[in-house]
Image (cartoon, rainbow, N blue to C red):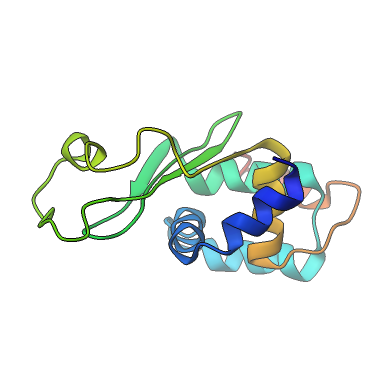
Length: 145
């Protein structure tokens, strides 16, 4: 599937979008960091660095009747989202492994690289610029991801 179709399908799925938004805001101060990029604009490299920082090492979000979304940061950030088939089940006390047995075996969405950057740019509303001024400011502040 081409990048535009993947992005369009992703934004048609409210639970997947909510999962990505959660992943991008799971650390304190995330909104202020994203606002900085919204105001100044950012290159793809800047956005990728910020995604990596916000995803941290790894994390996830999900719950009863919701999609299960996993994310990981580091050098190659990735976001994956599975449709939960357990809408009628009480999964309140389930472990991640138990929840995954009710999920589809392959993710609905696997976002990484250029597709992840495009999705985040659209979701957060970040204009594109060059060069990577934000990354240089993070280095100057000693907060490089």
